[in-house]
Image (cartoon, rainbow, N blue to C red):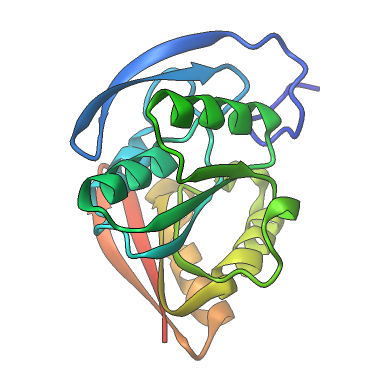
Length: 204
């Protein structure tokens, strides 16, 4: 069976490479590894998401499905620049993704990033911010379970931003989020570019 970026413990040889890219206005060089999401470039959907995000709010920020870490790194870099106290929880099931994110955070001197599995996040922790390029290809049931597990953990006044390809069901996911989250949550489309939608969830 072939491995996916959502494989928990990849057994294939890790082929690493360096990428140079811009995050939060900084030109940085990071390491990526095979067996993680989009190891050869910054994924287009992630790039669209990053362009549509506001500055991070103080508090706990969840990068849901961190891959090699671009969303977490971007948030931590911007928070450091603006002297905003943000703790970034970089969550993934893939051990290689977590290891690569950890190395990239160390490389960039970002001590605010904690690469974690779900079991390592305190059960009572609420997030001021959630950001994600969610793993659509895990299948609808697993995706829905993931989103209903984490989005309700937004703190009152919190905000979640998700990027989803229109061709992979962004509009139907928008409707599902409205129907599923219900009262106390507002779901709106806040961006659209290059075939991707940015969906924003606000908690009252």
